Length: 70
Image 1: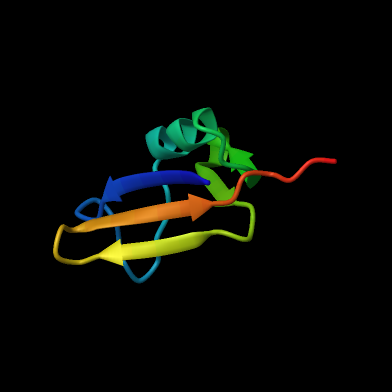
Image 2: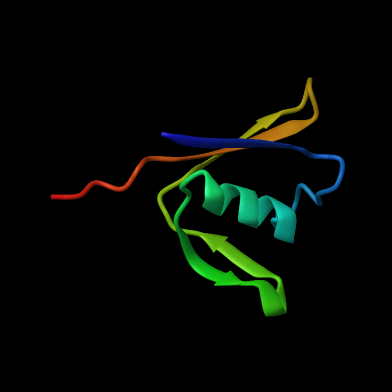
């Protein structure tokens, strides 16, 4: 499973959007994206994925299963 944790302080929790740096780092560790468009700063993680808020630590963790291949 791919996992990526980032601080919530730089994000609107009502409408969570990745920063360019976060998207590149997530792609580097193996996350799959349905949209990866740096020119428009539009990054959408392929579903399914999990978004886990840890309000005590002020972080959010995104998790995505590794791609299953035959």
